[in-house]
Length: 431
Length: 131
View 1 (cartoon, each protein chain N blue to C red):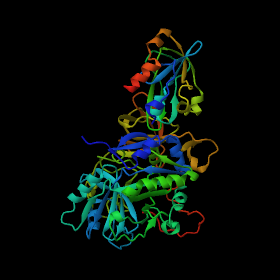
View 2 (view 1 turned 90 degrees about the vertical axis):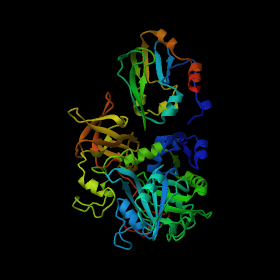
View 3 (view 1 turned 180 degrees about the horizontal axis):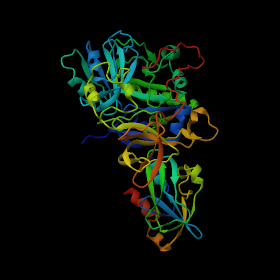
C-alpha cells in the first residue's frame, strides 16, 4: 500500500493549525486557523499563498521535444520561430488526451529554452504523464524526466501579490516589469542550464522561476524554487505579506476560488470522458469553423468523430446553499426530469446577487456579500445561459442558473503594476 | 485542526454520536453542534432550519449546516416541537464556529424529557471521540 506523502511544508502547516486531509496522495492543508472564508476573501482583496509543491513536473528536452509535445499536447506549440508559436519565456494551458479523446490530465507547458520544456501537471500525475510521453516518443530525439518531488512550488495570488513579491526581489523591475499573463521569467539550476529567461533572485540570492499564472482567477504568480529552498521562500513571503493582509490558504479556498473563476479540477470536471462540449474548448486547436483542428494530436480524430451527447456547463446559485457533487447527485429540469449529475459544487464566498446580477466583493459593494453556490454540471442536453436547473440529492432542491461565467471583476489578466511605477511597458496578450 | 486537547467540551450538556449537543433551559431544550463538529466542518456559510411549530421524532433530520465544501445533516437528539429557531444564524452562520456552545440552532419542547438521559454525557462524548 502506498503511503500518504508530505510536502516540504508539512511541518509548517501542522505548526500553524492547518486542518489536513489527503489530496492527490499528499497530506495537504484544507484550511488554516483563519478559516476558508477569510482565506478566499484574502485572495480577492489582498493576497493568499498556497503550498502547491504536491503538483508534479516533467522535463521534456531534446531536438525533437517540440515534435513530441505537438503530438501529445492539445495546444498549438507551432514551429520554432513561427508567428504565434510558443517561445521561451511563455507557457500554455492545455491537455494530454488518450487516443479515445478522454482526459489524462490538464497541464501547463513552459518553454524554458530552445529544445527545453517543463510540463507542470497535477498531484500524482508526473508518473502517468511522463509514461504517456515516453510511450509516444517512438524514435524521437527527446528525453522525458519525471521531476515529481524534486521541484519546489508555491502560488502567490491576489491583487497584493505583486507588491509582496517585488518587496523581496533583488531587482523587481527587471524581474516583473511588463510580465504578461502566461509569461514567466527566471531559471533554476535544477532544471539544467541554457535557460535564457535571466535570473530572478530574492535579495538573499535565492533563485526563482516566476510565472504569471495561477488557479484562482486573480492576479498573481506560480513560483518555482529548488526543493530545499521552498520552506525559506514560503516563510519569507509570509513575513513580507503580513503588512499586505496575506493569508496562507488551504485547498478548500483554492477549490472555491477556482470554481468561481470557471476553472476545471482535473479528474473531477474533466476526466475519463471525451473532452468536448465544455467551457474549456479554448484548450483545443479548433479552426475558426469549429469543425476541424489546425493540427493532429493524440485524441484529435476520436474527438472529431465523437457523438458524445453530454455537456459540461457552469452554474451559479442564488444563495450559498449547495448540494454535494458526485455520481449520486441529480440535476433536474423545470419539468422535474433528471438530466445529469453535479461535478463540482462549492461556495464562492466573494460574490452575491444584486437585483439578480452577480456582484463581486472586488467591486466594493455596499452590503456584505454572503457567497453563492457555484460549480459545474454534466447534463445530457445543451442548455443556454440563463436556463434554470435544480440540483438535488433526492431530498433537497437548490435552484441554480446556467452561466458562461461566474465571479465578475477577476484580476488575473490585468496589467501588472509594480509599486511606485505605473508606466511599465506591457508584453503582448495572453497565451 | 484542533488537537484533542484544544477541543472544548461543555460540562452539563448532553451529546449525540452525530456531534449535536443538548442543553437544558427553563422550560425547553436548546440544540447545537459541538466544538469538534464545527472544527471538522470549517467555516459554516449557510444554515437551513425548520419552521417554528414543526414536530420531529428523535433522530429525525431537522436541518442542514453547510460549510464551503460540505453539506452536513442535523438530527434532532430529542423528539419534540420546534418552538424557536435562532434567526441570527441567517446573517451570521459563522457564530457556530466562533461560539459553538453559546450558539443554539433550535429550541424544542421535548415530547418525552426522559429521552435526554439516553444521550452521552460530556465525559462519554469525550471518550467516544478519543476512540
